[in-house]
Image 1 (cartoon, rainbow, N blue to C red):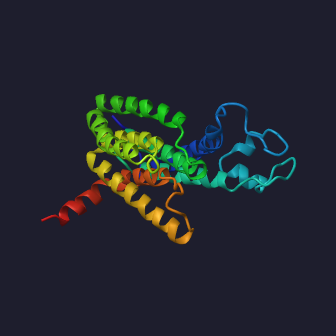
Image 2: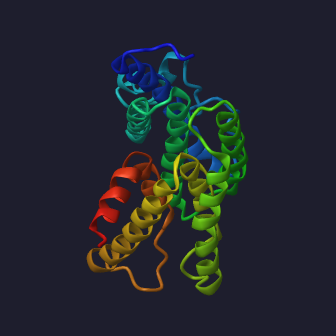
Length: 262
């Protein structure tokens, strides 16, 4: 039986965990695309190689205490680090309002993965297999455990959501190899699995937001940034954003749309 905590307290606890996870995500975002280890070596200045002290690695506060500069050589430290930590903390805090607690924890971790994938794909034009190949089975196991424990997750619906979202995009990727990439297909496999376990309405909303958002983003890139039709525009950030938003907006948007039908 869950211990009742005031939602504000739960959100604060989740936010703290989110800041810590966000610090880890900065490592993932910078090392995974280059094939580096996410465990070793310890974080260090890219210019002088000085290892950061433990207090310098404190989420957000470390950057503030250093004033955005390396303690040894004065090299500028990108504000991207605290921003990712804050974003992850915010996502975790938002997830804390979901019920039951187990669902909130799974959703928080899912959105953290979406954030990492979105940043990596926007920067490197790739959805790393190291992320999808590890998170898909990990979330499948978490969903199965939650299902067996009666925690509001449903593994069969998750598998169905995975098929409904991934198979059409897989066929599109085969038909239009210059557009959709197989990394995107693996990403929606994860999205369909997790959101399907919450309810198939979440999957439909994620697909709508991700695909329509990607189309609008491509048109804006061509109109504002001068992208040509043959230039590759990363689709992963839009799919990831659609997946994260659907965690909260899935049922309300689905009900609203169905209410418009005669």
